[in-house]
Every structure is written in structure tokens, then in C-alpha cells.
Image (tube, rainbow, N blue to C red; front, top):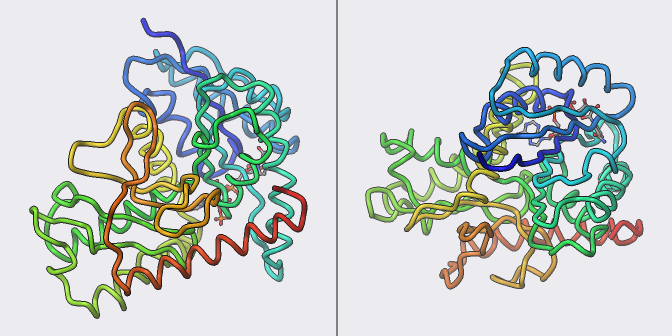
Length: 327
Ligand code: NDP
């Protein structure tokens, strides 16, 4: 049998954690034959709750689940880790300024970056889910200078999946009939879901919908879907976020299909005018265990404006955390 993969989940006692852990332990994160060692990180007051989740995981008797450690110590949680899912974050509370939010999250993600740098496996891959995900990923990466920057990513796969579902419903096709959709920029309300390179049945998706639907319905529906779910459910999305985290890692490890791509927040190399070093969402392919930005796409004026606006927000977030000494 293959050797076990160590997976660390932070915020393990939270909603997303609860939706995520059972799927990881059942083999859906990487592959159905690969044993898993789970390491759960929580803040001290949530450790007991995480231990309760660990008891339930044990009670599932998952054949692939080798071990579960629960801790409030980041060094211990990231020791030897191959896959780090950073879910726990400081949520924005009423009246909180963005700078305060970024600072509070810096207090979480800086020590996690340091712990990853100190003890993670040499092939570690990191996904930030907790918001503001892109900048949290950036802070983590900044404190792990010995780990290649490309190993730090932020989740926009849920936005990607939401966009796939909206387009499929509009055109009356299956999500599997859609190729080459992309989310650009920040995982926030400024994100830009791009249909201009997307194909449905081999033909341009943008040409199969009218421009007013695209601009006035599709883009805002995707960008505000999280709020719509809170309104309906009385709680934020959790299972769909967990599902997207699974998709993100599964694709990263196993690759994208030929002729298709996906979306992920990755470190910019300056492509498409996105300042180098920002963690921005791009159309990406996964090959040989790496996410690579799709190159050479034509960007029209409509898209350019929206990509630039979202990237400007990312630059501002980076400026704020720079001033705070967090990157
Ligand atoms: P959730 O599990 O619902 O969410 C966790 C994080 O994921 C939040 O930052 C949330 O952002 C973010 N997120 C990203 N995408 C989505 C999405 N599509 N839908 C919903 N959330 C999304 O939060 P809980 O409060 O239930 O649990 C958080 C847990 O994290 C708590 O148990 C807490 O103790 C723990 N924690 C652990 C830390 C650690 O391990 N060091 C540090 C801080 C907290 P948003 O707030 O914008 O919804």
C-alpha cells in the first residue's frame, strides 16, 4: 500500500471542518487508495469540540484513516504535513474595519507560516480557505521563506463551481459540458467570473448568453452567492466550501483534464498585469503536481476593467498587511 499522507486542518471544530474531515478520511481528497493521517488544529477553547469530531471520525472506522491528532499547537499540527488546509480564521464582526480584520488574521496566519516553514514535509501544499483567503495565504507564505512560493494557494474553487452551476442552469446543459471558465482576482465581491474564454459544446459561452444577463445577473449572482446562502440557510455555506477545498486539492495532485482548466488563487508571476507576488485567482491548469497559470489569453476591455478592479483590492490588502509588518 502507498505510504500515508499527512493532512492538517485548522479550524477543525468549525462548520467547514465538520463538512470536510469525513470526506478527507474517506479518501476523497487525494485518492481512494491513499492512507491519511489527520492533524487537527484548534484554538484552546475549541480543542474539546475538535476532540468530539475526532471521536466521530474514529467511529466511522474509515479503512484509510491511520491516525488523528488534535492540538492547539501550530508546530505540532504542521509537523511533517503534506497538505495544509487553513480553514480557521477570524471572521469579520460588525463595525470591524478591514485593517483590523487583516491584523487579527495576521496573528493567526503568521505563526502558521512559521510552523509550516519549520516542520512541514518538503512537498507541502497549502490551501487558505479562511477569509480574507488570498491575503491570509500571502501572510502565511511570507513567513515560510524556505518553502517554494508556488505551494501557497487560496481557494476560489467555490466561486468557480458556483459559476459553472449558474451557467449550466442558464443554458440547460450539464456542468460537465462546460470548459475553460475562470475566476480572476480576489475571493471577495470584486471577483470576476469570466465567460469569454469558456466553451459549451465547443462553442463560446459568452456568445450563447446576452450581455445584460452576463453583466447584471451572472456576475453579481456568483459574487454574492455566499450572502444569499446566509439569508436562506441562516448560516454560512459550509458543505459547498468543504467540497471546493476537496476539489482544489484533488485537482492539484491529480491534474486537470486535457483541454480544460480550473481556477485557483496562486502567486502571480506578473501574468496579465497582476503584480508579481500577489496571490490572485487565475485560470490554471494542474500538471505534474503543480498549478500553472494559463498563458496567452486575450483579455477584452470588459474583462480588463473587472480584473483590474479586483486586483487593485488585492494590492490594497497587501499594502495594509505590509504596513502592519505582516509580509
Ligand atoms: P466556518 O468553518 O464556517 O468558516 C471558516 C472560515 O472559512 C471563515 O473564515 C470563513 O470566512 C471561511 N470561508 C471561506 N469560504 C467560505 C464559504 N464559501 N462559506 C463559508 N465560509 C467560508 O467557521 P466556524 O466559525 O464554524 O469555524 C471556524 C473555526 O475556526 C472555529 O472552530 C474556531 O475556533 C477556529 N479557529 C481556529 C484557528 C486555529 O486553528 N488556529 C484560528 C481561528 C479560528 P467568512 O468568515 O468570511 O465566512
